[in-house]
Image (cartoon, rainbow, N blue to C red; front, side, top):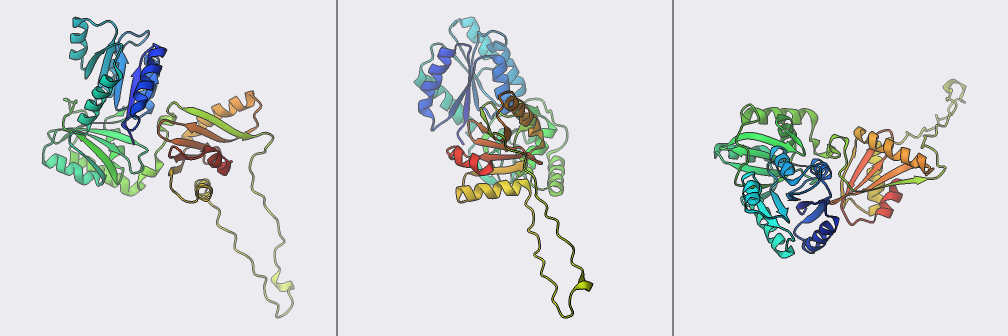
Length: 374
């Protein structure tokens, strides 16, 4: 999965231009944009962002506030500041505040690409590992007293988190905008992860109490009790990252229901002597909504390739309720499937007793997927 760059600027024309210029480097990274500070905060909360490029002068939350906010909540995400009002004093203040780069507008596309690649290379200066045992690797980090920032992606690439180490001590952890011990426990519950290593740590104050070995033992004990939670990945805090959302419905269709056929019971005493009891066919095992959805997708796609995850998510009820309200407003009929086109994957939400969420790779034909689940 390629890294994602977030560009923040209230100048929509400039945003489109920069998005177009950087689109030529789609093999190296993807680009998302935000027209103001609040929209940027929403993207940061819901998406896996590698680098932020922010204008300094913006209405509402300006670039200086944005820099301060990111350094506090997302200290592992480097920020490149850009401005059309270049002043030596401004440059000094921005760089001393913690920005990774200072650029003047208009920014040359090739120069910007070079700056982005330099920062991305730094993020993996210590190398990367795939399908590793995280607890074993962390014990090596502790033994060798390493100072590093570990960016960890779960087995199916759906979730990502960050662990911060200084001299072998776990200083802090982050998943989205959640930090501390809670985030550390969740990351440590993932199995067969991929990770990239940066040989530095932006955290100087230890924000997680306790020794690493004790934390690892607690996390492994929780994993044994609850199973591998990687398959439960999905909408964090009930939120979906910004993307194109479509609701699919059949006008006039009714809610699905199970038909029950009542048959008279067999009276053994009333049967003729020597007659054999009728063979009663055992009812087929009823599949859970999750298994049923997965079976339909596999049949429609001819295999499991492209299916990232299928799981139940009760927290998606709020999203379903909002879309159903819109459907009633436009008299669209009964809601069958919600389609969400995200930056790095496709998401289908099927309203039912368990509210099934399906994560799929980009590029799969959406019409067939929607038809299979409708």
